[in-house]
Structure formats: structure tokens, C-alpha cells
Image (cartoon, rainbow, N blue to C red; front, side, top):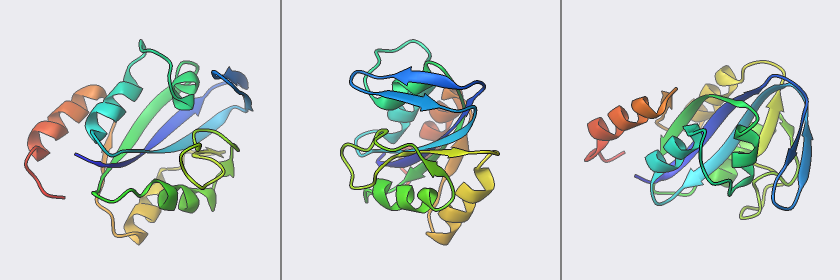
Length: 152
């Protein structure tokens, strides 16, 4: 299944996140990462929940130091990452140059003082998108089995 996703992340303390080529100083708080997976949405998000993995994307380096609370799977044949990122940027503080090298937005990571779920759901409803909120890799597997042949 193809699509985009939101990751809702909590960082308990201010941290310096060093990636392969950059360093980001992130304050304590909640973060939303906007991503896409145009090959396998479920496998990409399932990977984000794994603690042990090869660090590849900027988000991998953040998740090594933070807690992934939940993800919103947004099935779509269209690449919605930029559109969703621009919408989230209206509400959260942009962490410039984080995870956005393949899109025209300045960032794909946004900081919030409080849990951002109401905002994310409002965005998804406003865009007329279907989604599934999940909290674990097991939930992804169950959702995949149920929706294997479903046309979203």
C-alpha cells in the first residue's frame, strides 16, 4: 500500500540530534514528522517503531533518542507529503532542513508544546483523507491483513 504518514513523537529533554551530516538542537516537547512511503506504507512505519535498525534517515536519529507515541497511516496513490507538511507547518514550529531534502518544504519535522492529535485529525478531515492511527507494529500487521485487498 502506498501513502503518507504522520509520526507523533515525544522528546522528554532537550537533545542534540546528530545525523550523518547535520546537527539539530531540539527542545523538550512533542514533534510531528511528515513522511511518505510510495512503495510500502506499512513496512516504512513499522520500521520507525523498531528500536534496533540501521540509522539512515534524519528521523531514525531522532527516534533513537525519543519516544514514538503513535503514527497516522494515510493510504493514497498520490504523494501527499508536501501538502501535509505545509498544513502541519501552519500549527507547529518548523525544524528547518529536517527530513525534507526530497521535497520543496523547508522541513518535515514540527514541534508542538502539547500533543498535536486534534490538529492532525482536523487536517486529515479538512483534506478529506482516510487514515488509521496506530500505536505499535502489531497494530500495523493487523491493519495490513484486514486491508490487504482494500482499495482506499
